[in-house]
Length: 80
Image (cartoon, rainbow, N blue to C red; front, side, top):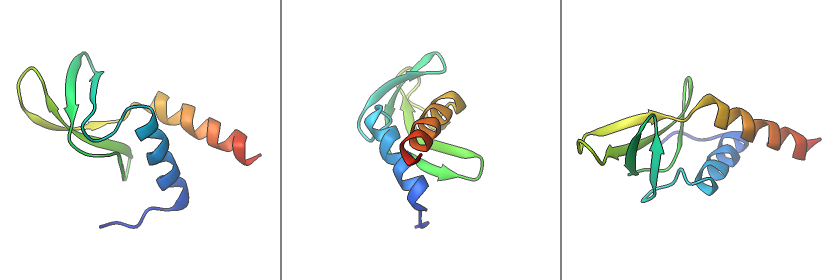
């Protein structure tokens, strides 16, 4: 298991508060998904494991950059 930095851990917690959490249902990329994991940090951003409600296929979804930028801006404003 990878060790998250404080910033990564805080960002993942904020993503969970926004609904990107285990056992939640989201609509993203024009499709509905049941989430099967909490957000995780990757090399190029953050992702979440999910199962498509339409096809039943398991997928790893990247969290949209606009969501990450919004959270990062909010965290930076809090730190200032």
